[in-house]
Length: 122
Image (cartoon, rainbow, N blue to C red; front, side, top):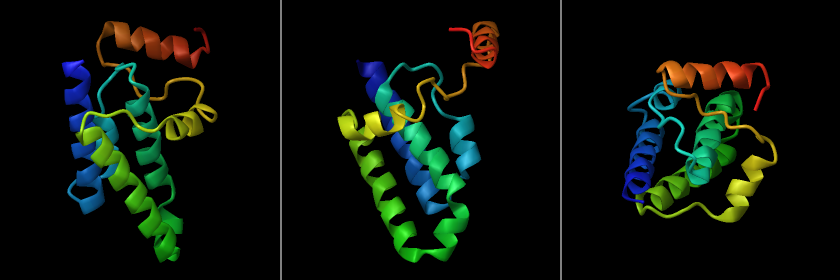
């Protein structure tokens, strides 16, 4: 459990750095923990990817931007405490992403898992 706690703290830090503009979403995604199996981290991954995808909307709609920033801050604070994200947040992302989208590790085993996912083989 201690390792999961540290991964959650690390992801919380990545999210916070994105929010303050210290790193890009791309850098955060590149540094995301691989193959954690932690549904809270998977949901956080999707939330940060959506943050990037909504860039145009964030520029046009200040209220949307503030709400999304608050949402990511809540995710960051929850993970920083080592807690799981609320079930409704996890379920919300699971219904759109039945497969894990977090990249696998860059070693041989991770490459094979990524290739099998590409082929849609479980």
